[in-house]
Length: 57
Image (cartoon, rainbow, N blue to C red):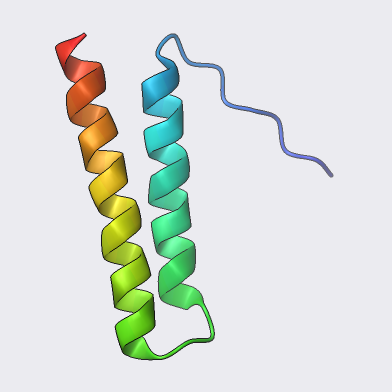
């Protein structure tokens, strides 16, 4: 079943949510711990930056 896109008034919040989901997926990946943590931190940093940017607008 295909997933439906989340409808939000602010597209930055939608992108931030996708980065948060990507971060959680990175933690569950079949990689070394250091690689998983690096990917998680990178995705969460992007999500936090988008949330700050979206909150200021």
